[in-house]
Image 1 (cartoon, rainbow, N blue to C red):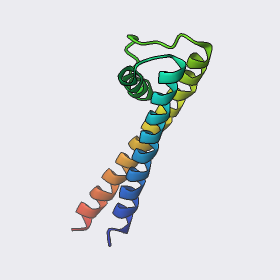
Image 2 (image 1 turned 180 degrees about the vertical axis):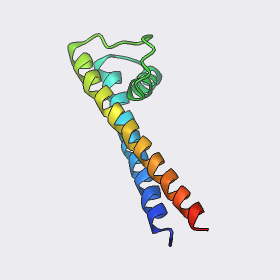
Image 3 (image 1 turned 60 degrees about the horizontal axis):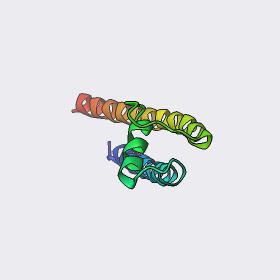
Image 4 (image 1 turned 90 degrees about the vertical axis):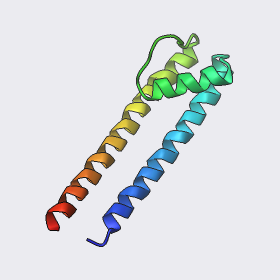
Length: 101
């Protein structure tokens, strides 16, 4: 194997990380202006919500915040799925590579 598959997966990890970062930034800006949270609380809530942890210490209070959060969680599940898929694919490639040696 020439490593092209590994490079492809590495590039997909980078892309998924960039998309996750942009989504966190969008969430942070949204929660700061719509829910009137501090920048730190907005970032914290964005990360906790996107990761679907949801401690419950901060909750949206506006209708717009509740709707945004519902879709934001769905996006978080999608991002977690993408990362899980990439991890499984990378593990499979590593296993195949070890078997060939």
